[in-house]
Image (cartoon, rainbow, N blue to C red; front, side, top):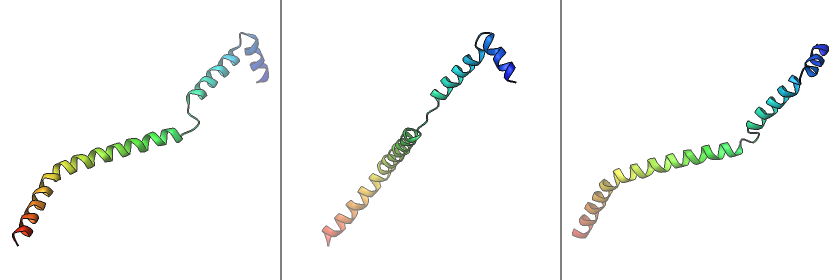
Length: 77
C-alpha cells in the first residue's frame, strides 16, 4: 500500500490534490453551529409573531364589540 501511495506521489501529486480537495470541503462545513441555531430560533420567533398578529387582527373586532357591550351595560346601570 505504501508503495502505491509513493508511486501516486511521483506521478503528479494526486495525493496532494486529493488532500487539497478534502481540506476545501472541510472548510465549507461550518464548525460552529451556534449561528445556525440562532437563525433557526429567529425564524421560529418571526413565525410565531406573524401568527399572533394575524389572530389578534381576526379576533380583535369581536373583542372590541364585546368590550363595547360591557361598557354600555355598565354605563346604563
